[in-house]
Length: 344
Image 1 (spheres, helix red, strand yellow):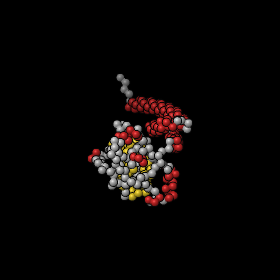
Image 2: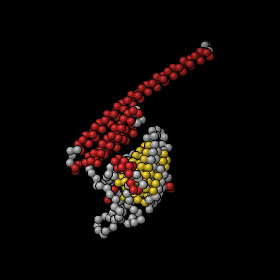
Image 3: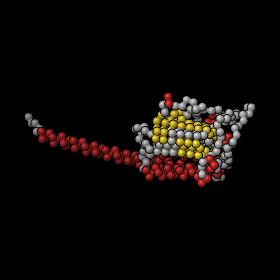
């Protein structure tokens, strides 16, 4: 009987081990190659779909110039929804796109969004904005009363150069947002109200407010909130998007199609949103379902085109956290016991 010597057994084991390692390397390379092929195909498909949709959006915008006035709202509604869809598609595709392609797509979307907003402002002029320095008197009729009836302890006010914002700064803001934008600028320790008559289908800008309480009734077209500190802002249904930038220690309650939140810290958002909300460069963001209510609010939901039954308040995409395995540490759900029960 023959026996293998220890050295022979050791040699055989080494040969088998190296063979297994070689096979593993080959298999790994095959997987990496296949993954590269898949990602390349995905990137190619994304580019084709993205470019095709952008082309269709441009055609819609070109057609708006000669379209009858009655169809303009439908055209711009379609354009805004397609741009929003592309933004969500881009975010979902980031995992296999190169940084250059992501930046290029973002720039393309920004240009489209700006062109659409400028053209809509040109072709669908909104009611000239102006605050009324009086409280609406409730009249006895079958027509629904204005939601600001009875708010005698609040005031409707407009921020301007005389209210703490320099003329040069004010001019820049008006040039950027347009003279049809409702603006509250440079306020401290005040209670402010915008009513539906002034707000409906207008853009709204709140900026440089400190320790203010703001109530906005009606259906703004878009809402911009910039540089707010320790403020509480309660808003009715917004037709399109809410943009929040550089806000600190604030409580917000609003409904919208899309939320974009940038560079903000320690904010609580009571949210109703029909798409996925997006945050970027933000920390300590807490979300809860939208729970502010007021008279005639359901009619405002209809006017804004929002379905009050569809609410993705807890579906947040963080542009600074691309991992799908772990949740972003920059936002969380506000515990029920910590939520505001009544805003009155």
